[in-house]
Structure formats: C-alpha cells, structure tokens
Image (cartoon, rainbow, N blue to C red; front, side):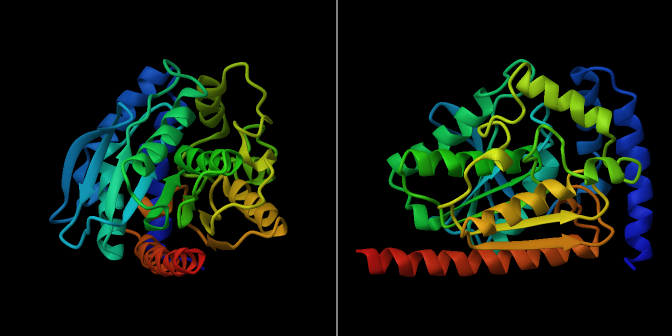
Length: 311
C-alpha cells in the first residue's frame, strides 16, 4: 500500500487540477488555470541554485537550465508536457534542474509552439529541429539524453523515430515519464482509471488531443508512436503511475519496443499520479529522480564506450 502522504497528495491534486480542468471549456481557460497552479510555490518547491537563461536553437525558443553541478558537455534535451497546449515553466524547470544537477548535465528546455494555434506537426518538427541543431553546432550525440513527460514524452519518442528514419546519430538514451503514445486512446487504463486519475479526466484529455491533431488520423505513427515501428531506437526508460489513465500508454509501448529488440527499462509505481516525478514533495518522485539519474549516468558511459569502439 502506498503512503498516506501520497493518498493525501492525490486528493489535493484532484481538487486543484482534475476538478478544475473538468470545468474548463476552452484551451484559454486551461492555460489560465495551469498558469495559476504553476505560480504556487508550495507545489513546485524550486531548487536552490537554479539558473535559467533564454536561448534559441534553429530559431526556436529554448531555455538553458543550469545547476551548480551542471557541466558544459552533457545535455538533457527536455520536451515538456502540457497536452501540447500549455507550458508550466516553473514546474518543469524545477524538475529539469534537479535531474541535471544529479547527472552533472546542462538542461535544455524546448519551448515548442503550442496547439491549437500551432497544431501537429509543428511541435514535433521543432523538437526534431532543435536536436539536429545541437548536432550541427558540434554537440555529441552520445552526450545527449532526450527526456520528456506526457505530451513531451510523445515528442521525445517521435524525435527518435524520425532520427532513425533519417539515419542520423541517436542520443545516448530516452527518458519518458507518463508518455502520450496512443492518441486513439485504446489502452484499458484510459477507462479503468478514468474515475481514479487525480490529474485529469478523459474529456479533458480528449480536448487537448483534438487541439493538437485536429483531423489527423490518431493512429498515424508520427502522431502516435505506439503504432510506429519501434526497432533500432536508443535505450529507453519508461515510468508511469498506477493511478493514471495513460498508464497503459507507457506499458504497451515499452513492451512493444522490447519485443522489437530494444533496450527498455520500465518502472510502474503504485499509487502515484500522472507525471509524478515532477511533484518533489512525494517520496516516490525523489526516488524516481534518483533512479533516472543513475540510468542517465550509466547510459552516458555506455554510449561513450560504444562511440570509442566504433572509431
């Protein structure tokens, strides 16, 4: 049984997030709600020593997120969640700062264009372009990790698939937290957990999805990477919680990637909500950051050794 603190947090999150999102009837209303939540310091718990510096790659707005232990040659390229429709810069930067500090990396947050003003494939194109610009500027692929949560997990996996198809150098690994991989919403958890998910209900999820894909086929592989050929991708770490409608997106995609011969690690955590590693108050979030940091550090080393052998 998960802790009473996690159960209490889920109840608070349901009131603060799920119930209020369910009362939003437009993207603008959702954005205003998320903006207010993102400004609530007690929920975010900003790390000390974090520095955020605006920059651009391929003319796309990004932010360097640095901590005292950040180094200049290792990069966590991060695609944030937000249903493709909004951004929580304080929440996401705080998480990226912690992960960067623990892995002695620099964080690079991509502020991709948001739907519905910029629907598919604009966000996917921009994320792909930023990675390629890093390569063009001389950053080494074995020193890059691509990470993302929720919608950002979708964009991270889509970017890797596009890189494979273009026969371009792959990053050292992918780290995907509660990734959106099946826009057709065919996983059992989308329905069995629809009343339990403290983050959002199915109608809110579908509103955000429709804003992004419009009339696109939700089973198009570039839209829903679950339907893509998943062979030949970088080592990938998946994590999700048992209390979220998107749990099966992570499980089924991880299993499919593993069946295709991929190096896959999957971590499903009892009792926690959608994108739980972002909520640093949770013991499970701190444990996840430690686990992901160890994974990233190991994959940096493995990719470096593979590069040396190849040369």
